[in-house]
Length: 248
Image (cartoon, rainbow, N blue to C red):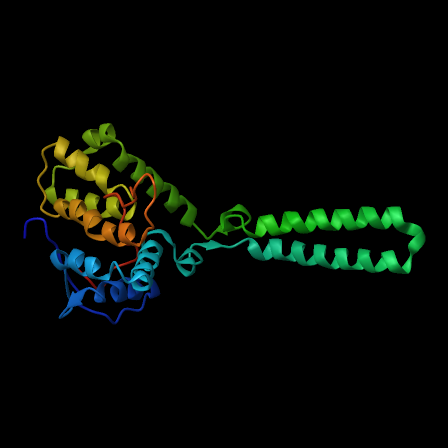
């Protein structure tokens, strides 16, 4: 229907943990395994006075659109945090030993003080490194990094209207694939914009304009009122991640 979207949940029994969370979230708004966006806003309006439930929905939605599944990331790369953890353990041991020596050898105060300061600095640096991105001290497996660079290049292509004009596919089905990949890469809005510029008509493109207005009320209702008003929301480039999903 015009302005509305039907999402049919065809299979809830999926192996991927992230996909299960997406399907569980959609099921909260489903009737007979079908989510109708026409009624979603009405349901959200009914819940707006229930701060606990609407905040729970808001947190879950924020997680689904912004939090990566670290188990998936570990399939492609080896985390370097374990290496940093070794330095942190060593620094803790050195710090404890230095403090103990201060009581046992009172005459070596200056030397022990330097050891305490050095151990403390090493500990602080280790703690900072633990919270750094895992790719900083880790490494990619096999040819995975090469594939990442290729996906990054493809994302840049889909983000650049001039490049899309240059390499635009003639087959309409290819535009559909570009739209799917662009949405997964966070630049689906750019693909839709290019399709409008090049006068390419694809029914699926309208979904990207509906999705942000469908889920934005969950965030805006849950957000406390501010002096400047609420301007948050999701762009058409975003969307649920994950693999082949159990909804369509």
